[in-house]
Amino acid sequence: MEGQPAYRAKQIRDGVWRRNAKTSAEIHPLPVALRARLDRAFRVDTIAADEITISDRGLTEKMLHPLSDGALIESVLMHYPARGHGEDGRPEHRERYTLCISSQAGCAVGCPFCATGELGFGRDLETAEILDQVRHAARRLAPTVAGGHDAHLTNVVFMGMGEPLLNLDRVLEAVAALSDPQRFGLGARHVVVSTSGVVPGIRRLTQLNPQFTLAISLHAARDPLRDVLVPLNRRWPVAEVVAAARAHARVTGRRVSYEYVMISGVNDTDVDADALSALLRGDLAHVNLIPMNPVAHTPWQASSPERVTHFAARLREGGIGATVRRNRGQDAGAACGQLAADRAGEPPAPAVAHRREVIIRQSEVAMKGDRSGERLSADLEAAVAGQKADR
Image (cartoon, rainbow, N blue to C red; front, side):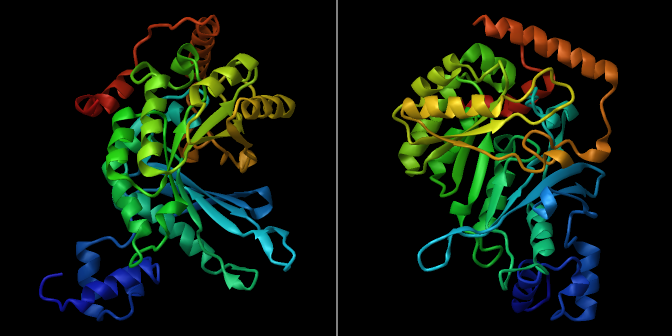
């Protein structure tokens, strides 16, 4: 602030990041008068409050964050205890705390197995609103004692509400703050940024050569089916998405992760496994298989455990690394695809019924191997319009 010595800036930065202050009153080195000036000019925290839902016997916490303008977003904190022990008695897999955060309020992409898509698009989050989700989670962990030491976040994944690469500037600013040793101090290699396939955004990341992991929400390897499951595919087809990801892996030397939601009878057939193997063969890539979580407006169910195991084995036979992901937070609506800002309310029953009819119609066309030719939604057209020039 004007007229203040330079060391005040460091005191404020340390108060926000080192001591995770909620208000200026908690930045104790500052004089009372300066704290009052801060309160008049700035907000230390952009999140009004947290509402917490706990599941998985305390291992998963879904947090509802009302923002200053009334927008609602959600984040999910997941605890993975240490497991397995080596000959020296130490855990082979260390304890982890992973936070899944949102980059937008709502989402324009509208993937039909994802509850956030039902909300539609609200707005992009500001950098501070992204970062404050992390600060709130860190604040919750601070009093926790696990194994004789204070618990702390070990991983942050941009897999919550919204499409991160449609808010890329703010996401990059947030990652820079997270990896800055003078601020949050989390190494970039402990950050994952996911996209449903915004090709210009992937290419821009490749030019920047980041150290964080890129994840692609793939969900189908055949264009007719991916048109339905990931509507952005009508703008940037699957081969173009994978080509951009392949170039990213080659330039950065970083393995790309592919997320694949398993839907019974839709994308879990041997034909789909073989198409996915052919698409990714020879790439620096890994596939995470995620059984679909219940979402009210879809007519689909999760693939059976046996089918998921078979699909994974078929991928491995095709030379593709694959991991079956555990469901976390399903009973609290905190699992993959379930974030829908609880207080936003359920959509009207006629709207749900109509959406189910559309999904069934589109699926029937896709399962025949045909592309429907339907246009992107108006919201999604508007959201990707700014990407055209970079294509």
